[in-house]
Length: 166
Image (cartoon, rainbow, N blue to C red; front, side):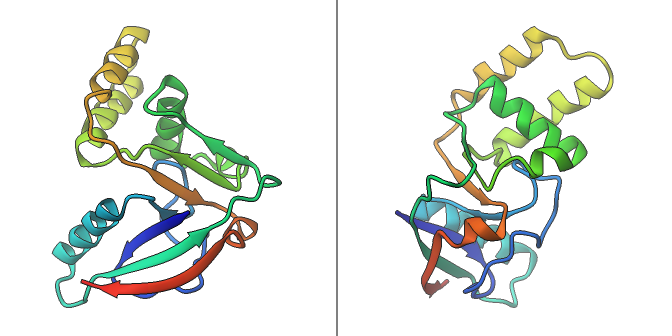
């Protein structure tokens, strides 16, 4: 399977311990199987630093069944709970449970709704109905995906192929 990473640099040897901890699936090296999504990531980065070129890093992924892989099927309650723990608290325990986490992205349109839910939780105003309403709302979001490679062992499943400049 081909996976993409949108960046402003070539990344032949990814590091899962570089970057923020309070993102969807915790700290890791993030990729997608959707080329157009990776290009959107490049364009977003270019808005903040237009001096650099956009680089689409392309990898071949070969699944290793011996790894601890967590796969979420769409926006579901379990996905939301996992994302909330990471985004709100940078959950350390959750970050050590899996080598690879696969699931939907809390992208620009989704993250606003998730952040509002996190705020309601913090203020004690979130209910089971609040959560279900959010998940219902998310079913109308456009398809997307992300793969978070969280350990050095998981990176052995990736083979760098090439880059394309944007």
